[in-house]
Length: 229
Image 1 (cartoon, rainbow, N blue to C red):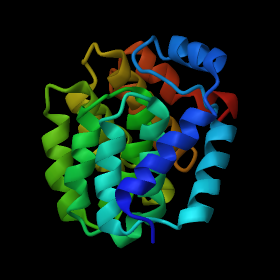
Image 2: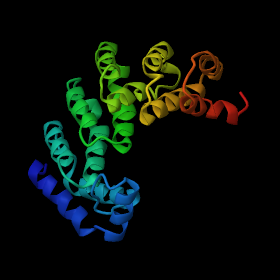
Image 3: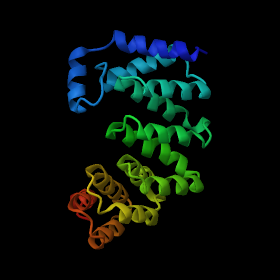
Image 4: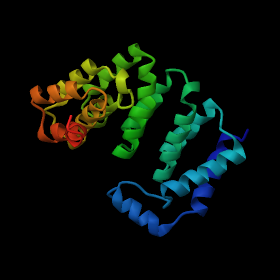
């Protein structure tokens, strides 16, 4: 098993050696120049990650937490993407205290590209198996002044399908439906649209009576309208 610092060094050197400046420029522009990039588009980055793991194996759980924090403190966005991938691959091996690490990731270097992975794919999986944990953090986040926490709370059930707690989702929406933040309104619509794939009548009736902002209502009805449900 490779030492955690050597693993970090190997990832950085591999990404640096394969950096593509022209792609980095375009990727940074797409992300409104909020983050630096090596210029590794998703297929290339994932291939490089696979090559590294084949050579080194996955780090231990304790080392992954250390590596994730290191990558999150790094400038290049691809390192944050790799950090999330490591967490997704090994999430089942962490205990529920990993939520504190995830909470820190949500509020640091926040943008939709990280929030929309962390919340449904990491936080959501923890909450699905621990309702007490869910209630504690959802309540905290939905009442936060940080709109990324609000978005995280709203989309945390995005992958639940028929296991979605629609009453909980409606509660979160009623708390935030008048929020002027674009990313909150978009989250409301996205969450409703996903649940409408399983309970279109419920969602349609809710949108009809909930007095949502136009963006949320429009997004929430997309699947229903497209399929004439």
